[in-house]
Image 1 (cartoon, helix red, strand yellow):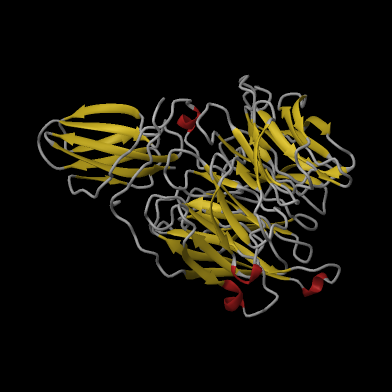
Image 2 (cartoon, one colour):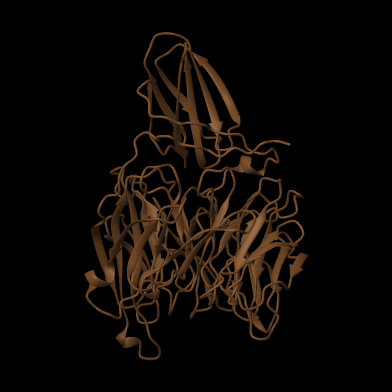
Amino acid sequence: MKKCLLISYIVISNITFAQTPEILWSFDMNDMAFGQAAAADVNGNGFLDVCFSTYRNDGLLYMLEGDGSIIWTYDIGGCGDAAPVIYDVDMDGDLEVILAGSCNPTTFCIDADSGFVQWQTPMRGSDSPPVIGDVDNDGKPEIIHGQFGGYVLCLNGEDGSVVWELEVDPDSWIQTEPALLDANGDGQLDFVIATWSFGVNHKLFCYNGNDASLIWQSDAPEDVIYHGVSFGDMDNDGIVELVIGDYAGILHCFNATNGELNWEYQFPSNSYYIGAPTSMADLNNDGFLEVVFNDWFQIGAVDHNGELLWSYNIPDYGQAFRGIALADINGDAYPDLTFCSSEGKIISLRGENGAFIKNIDLKADFGDDDFELEFAPLIADFNNDGILDAFVAGGHAEYPDVENNFGRVYMVTWGEGNGPEWKMFRRDYHRSACICNDSLLNPQEPVAILNIRPTDMYQLYPNPAYDQLHIEINGNVQKTIILVDVMGRTIKTYSIYENNFDLDISMLPAGIYSIEILQGNDSATQLFVKE
């Protein structure tokens, strides 16, 4: 039997204690923004910009600079509930914004730096955030999202033409964002959705992406479902797991290959409903993925066997309906949880144990008891100062008296952590909601990364890094550099004599890694985050 050893950190270098959050700027609208925004550098100035849509009394799609100034707005003709996505869907070298309209039943493709509408396609209306990927193997991206009336729509990214439309259940809505993955290992992208049934047909479905043919379905859910699955190989058996919650308060874990139910979890008390999306990461650095979820005012972390690790009660019975962003925000190399409470606060918790890190009361800043946050934070460095920021939106919305509505977005400096950044709804274009290393799909069980200690033997930067990691090493003797993944497996070994070395990490999936330096009888190890 192979042994699975826990990653242990006696001391991690460069730990930064929690800073006090500071509001960098705010921007007012005439209604709330729900869901989550999307961030990308759309105008090439080296800074992240942010895109979001608003509800009935405002009804605009906004593109703001990272400092809060307006790049452009576009009238979407009513409410926009589904999160946008920013992607080069026509492969022209420029980014576009894709938005599925809620009140105005139209899918929009808008040039990201100018606000010019490139195409728009009529559809049935949607609260389902779009997902993007090449599902028909034509070398071009397609767009998939759910619709009202129980349909799923697939469009060509270059012109918005319809690839296919699927009727799932006409007595339901497809509120969930599709999750895009190769579920059955055939090399073809598939998608997973669930129903918001108006009867009792509460189901999870997996379809082939190219022709929308059914792979499997499950009737395990016991109530309606609003948000889709998170996915990753939680137990390192080479098979991806899907985790989703329903309005019966039950968290379900499925085998992505065949839809078999692996386990279920429900809070023993105060279980009301799981409307929020789940998120995944290796929270405690044990080499396995954990999943976090929100049931009413309770946040829970569950391990790969379906056992509760810890729980946290959101103050004042708040809830985090739009989900939890995962990123190290305090520099300890463990992923932390950051979420918005409906009671108007941004809150961060330590991933390994649920301990409180920090919060900020935006309801108090706004000064109105009706102010709420129903938004999932973006976590990224928007002003390039080396500190992670949190972007959120809040306000008040009612119907039919929409004239009473109001909204405000905030950019808040949040912490000097290692990330990685969480820049869109469910973190990526496939809506995995997972800080996953692709090596976790390897069925080999993990080995330890043991006793990572602070060192002055060498420095590495930037951290987090994207394409290259620069290493400065003391001593004019031969050195061995070992690149190791979070499972403790050696990825590559280098033998060098130089004191300065640029390591190409562009081929690595996003995740946490370590660099071990061997020099004579000395050795030292440090962590870094690949974005």
